[in-house]
Length: 116
Length: 112
Image (cartoon, rainbow over all chains, first blue to last red; front, side, top):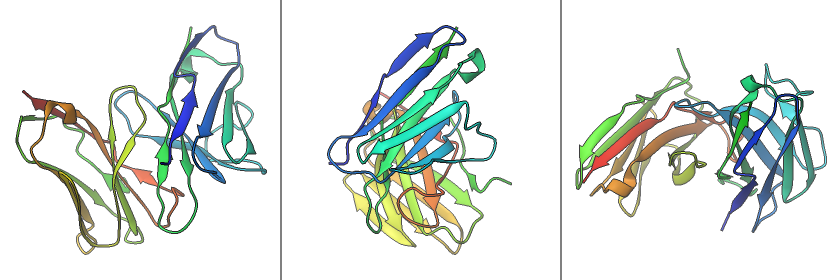
C-alpha cells in the first residue's frame, strides 16, 4: 500500500519552456502532498506543501510564480516549472501523506529535469 | 550548526558485514524518526519509522533512537550488494511529513 506515482521520470527541454510534473497517490487519498528538490549528492530540500483544494505553502526562498503547484484532487498534485532555465535542472520528488496519527510520508520515484 | 548531522560517507563494507549508520540532531522537540533508502535516480523508500526513544526491528534492519543523546542509528545485518544505496535519516516534531528535516544521506557500498 501507499504507492505514489510520479510522471514523467525524466524530461529534457529547452530553456524558456514550461514543464509539468504529476504526482499521484495510487491506492490512498492524500490531503497533503509535498514537493522536494534534490541536487546531486545532497539531501532533500522541501519546496512547498500542497493541500487539496487550497493554495500551496511555499518554503522561504522558493518562488511561487516560478513553481506553480496545483492540488485539484485527493489523488493528484502537479508542479509546473514555468519558463525553465538551466539552473532549474534538478531532481524533483513528491511525497504524500496518507493521513491519520503516526503516519509517515511516502515518496514518488522522482523526476529528473534537464534544461538545455 | 545543522539541525540534523549525518556523515555522507562513502562507507564501504564487505558482503555479510553489519552496517551501522548514524545521525545526530539538535532539536529536542523531534518525536518521529525515519530512515529512508534511496537508490540512484529514485525516490526515497521508507525503511523504518519510529516514535520517541527505543529500538525497532524489521527483518534485517534495526533502528535505535536515544533521545537523551539526540542520536539515532540504523543497523543492517548480513549486508548484500543490493543494499548499496544512500541512506537518509529524517525526523520531525509531528507526524505526516510536516516539517521533516532530512540528513545529508550516507552512501553505502557493499562489496561482493
